[in-house]
Length: 114
Image 1 (spheres, rainbow, N blue to C red):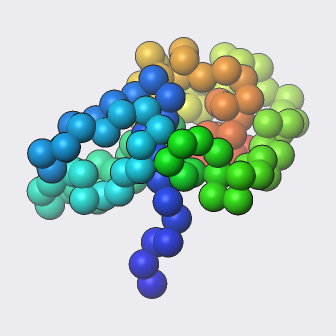
Image 2 (image 1 turned 90 degrees about the vertical axis):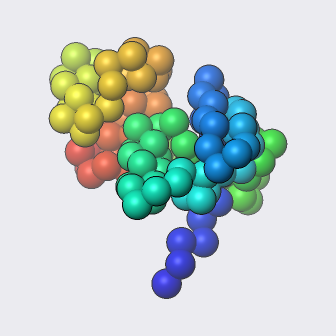
């Protein structure tokens, strides 16, 4: 079954691939990354928050909140969450750009938070 989710370039990110530039908020899919490992690179960028689920122009497909993940409760400190993010191979400079809510959301999506 094909992935029917739609993705856009995250805020503060841009990509060039397949003879096209992809800027913040623009639709993007795995075809933007050439070669045998293109799909893997695409998945890695989703995992690190550089490509996010949504529709071009901002918001989610339903233009609703993305499930209330902004209020994820955890007893972990910021440093502990950053350590978990590093285990997911998220670059330190990307982690530094995340606010606590975004970091919690990324960790929850990766299965590191309940």
